[in-house]
Amino acid sequence: KPLGDRVELADLPLREDLRGRTPYGAPQLDVPVRLNTNENPYPPTPALVAEVAREVALAAEQLHRYPDRDAVALREDLAAYLADATGVPLTGRNLWAANGSNEILQQVLQAFGGPGRTALGFEPSYSMHPIIAAGTRTEWAPAPRRADFSLDTGRAAAVVAERRPDVVFVTSPNNPTGQSVPTEDLRPLIEAAPGVVVVDEAYAEFSSRPSAVGLIGDYPEKLIVSRTMSKAFAFAGGRLGYLAAAPAVVDALLLVRLPYHLSVLTQAAARAALRHADETLASVAKLAAERDRVMAELAGLGFDVVPSDANFVLFGWFEDARAAWRSYLERGVLIRDVGITGHLRVTIGTPEENDAFLAASKEVGR
Ligand code: PMP
Image (cartoon, rainbow, N blue to C red; front, top):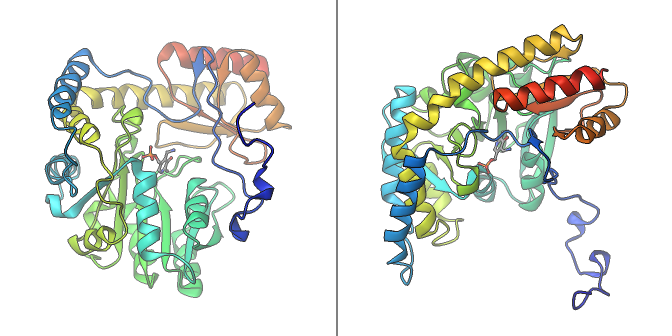
């Protein structure tokens, strides 16, 4: 028995507003086919692994010193990657990095949200947005999507104009539903926003749509584009998220970030991984093709499939999604119950994993 286990959570002098809340909890289960957290199923190439190991060994010689607090070299590398990927001229001063884009989003809410302020998001969307809002004591304002889960941007702009939130989240492609918002449709929404608009582009590399990064020049006082190396970049374990925005936005985040938040090891590993971006991202086209195959085969089995522009697919309809989720698990396939009635979400894996998922789908039925 662990020391002190006679004390329970309810006994602690916890903030009232955190009582009764549930933590983020995607199950981490050891099963043969894990298709539940939207990672890239392909492990890093041997060349990437060797370079990360080499760079981390070099960095280890400096472990007695604090890291570069502002991660200048890493931000330059991220800017070069993102400028190349989007065609938008960016410098290191337009970039900021943290331990996953979750930390990026937390810093954004620490600086632009907080007590007395409101953040608005279009649900269903990424479950961490309201959780990070709660942690930073930012009031959460949920707004709806259409019944088919797409975003009615005209209506969204009207809601933003009426509610006047300090922070607006737009996830594109949206997790867990998969659709992207066309960049031009974001303009009225951004123009209606009195505060900042965070476009969460965690899955952008999988999308056929241009990035919202192209709008930063037009809305430098409002637009923040959040990205991550956890998905297409196959670096979820490395924990590296980033944003692109005007340099003044980065100045604001410097006020709330913890000093030395990005370790020497993280910075070295991320830079090494970025040097292999081309070979890592070669998997994106394969995954997009597999996504299209999985969508078509699910539809062929009679499921309702929500069109996806990302590396996951939301599908239904299940009388009892929870029971169906368990049936998949019994067949060695871990997918995700995201709490949307009648639906489950599957991450696109390797062709063999997708085959296992589709075989299970035939058995689970609807
Ligand atoms: N945004 C979205 C939309 C996500 O789906 C995720 C991961 N599930 C994240 C942000 C955070 O990922 P990370 O912290 O690994 O960058």
